[in-house]
Image (cartoon, rainbow over all chains, first blue to last red; front, side):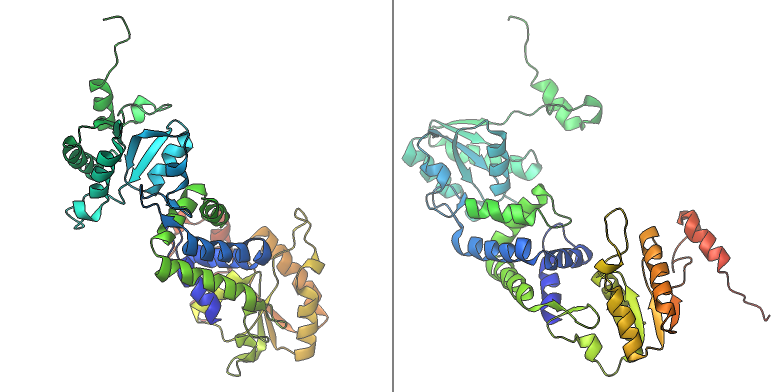
Length: 198
Length: 198
């Protein structure tokens, strides 16, 4: 049973799966060998071998430059700066942005010993200068680390003269005030919009 | 990005993972290509190719008969009948049983159209007759389906003359009465044990 034990051990290391759900997943897979288990093994091996970060923006893709960087229909003058791939995917799913990206690979964190040299910030400044980008959108998470990183990048981009913007903070669409945290409410109040003519 | 999308789609089919956690798992794996992703791909492929149900008891193993059936230190006269592999593993983890197993592969369920011929019941009766087993322990789940299946197997085993027992029902060790369901409490009361001499 060594093979099966090893599979369960590896599965249990995935985020969201513990030892119990890893056992369940292994049995689930063994009941679906041809429809799921073998395709999953192949997809893992193939993705591990082929998918690499884009040398321009850090997006994960089998091609370099990635599909987004190579797409001529995308606005080459806008760079949306995100912490990691999951954020890029979230913005792509919203289908409301048509520019390029820059994936930092994390946030500044004194606690975890992550400094500017560990993120793709130098590459970002060089890229903005070289491509003469029109606008850089700071799309970090609205967390302390995210906002610290955003401030640092804002400083670093000052020398390039690029226009820098950030995502709006406020009430989420569909959100109920009663369930919102105080920080969001005060941000939404401070950034309130005029509805009548000035 | 087709490879990555396909990997995420396959991961999202695992029990316990939805689309969101599948994306998270894929990124997690890509950050650990050599330590986790490639070993997982290999373990999946190897397990899919090698692990098969034991022809005697239905336990999953690379060898047939399985390691449990082949173990001469185990009591060959006892057969513990379980619904599926997860239950066998649970009993093995308890390290309180040293006989053989018989994995049914599910429970009788009129709703899902699962009849006796879909479970390994015929094989169980033949096995009990052939091996002249001393005792058959019904270790089905304490659910309606599990107990229906147990009743059916009890009937079927009558012809063999084997001694049939079932797991005790009662208060789980460490369980608090206040949090127990009524069914467990009444089972525990009905099966109460005499502590003073008769």
